[in-house]
Image (cartoon, rainbow, N blue to C red; front, top):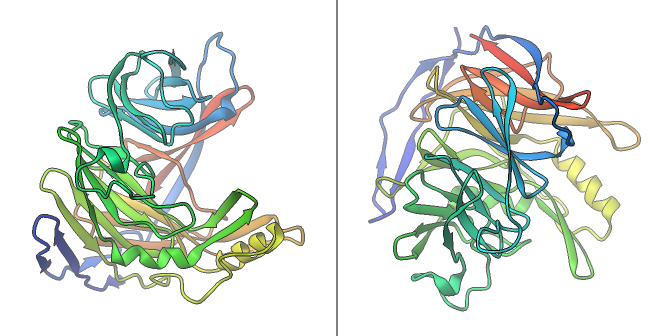
Length: 378
């Protein structure tokens, strides 16, 4: 059985900046004999009529029995994953004291039937039934520890801890490198920014096309997830990731000894093309290289999953055809435990939910929402 090389984690204590190395660890490749099965289930929506393709962000309840989807900007749909049934359509106010953010880019289900919704101009906590619980002014001028004249936005990838004591984000200006990881204490709205040097290469793989006052971005970006009671900060450009423990205020860098794929993208690409066509061409060229995806926490097995793609192919019209797909697993401390190429797949999974050790990918079946369920056996 193939061995995975040892790796070293670098611990960055946010309070004092000390660095410690973890002990080397060696494990078997648990994915060496991976098999899988795929099934599709349709959600019973009763007499409700809506566009099932309009779900665009999702999260699980703390007990992982229900899925929540943000729909058409001012609705949250609650789906019972045990019985595959739509339970509720919660309609939120767009005006008044209970108004939710317009164009929310943050969506987290919290304990006590609450939801965290964040946008550029407004960030708040609401009951899923619609009542406003708390509001936060997440701007540099309102945060002690951030320069009042800072020009960057603090709301990109904004997340909050379950007890609502700590928010984190990736502040920056669109089209420029991020400042780092912002950590915000919600009790006094004090903040600090922690450096993320392992993710700095991401700026080399962001392709920005500007027209007049507008711009579009393709390529890689830094992202934050809240998984297994900690924040995970990652990029598509590299296998390196950070985890932030909000309870101990500590930041940890994790590096991995991948053998099947490169550890990061390399080389130079056109990052400021002069046309939309040039942007698309540069993006397709860049996607020949490794692109790492998001993480999934399997509470049943107590492991993380992560997918990656490489060597994307396109037809003569520039449409995606297929790619090499890789799956990695990590233990609860983010030690690499398995890696394999899934040759039967032509694209990696993204935007999934995990319940009972299975990956749930949202889908549309006829006029109803549905899930494609992937069962991984190893």
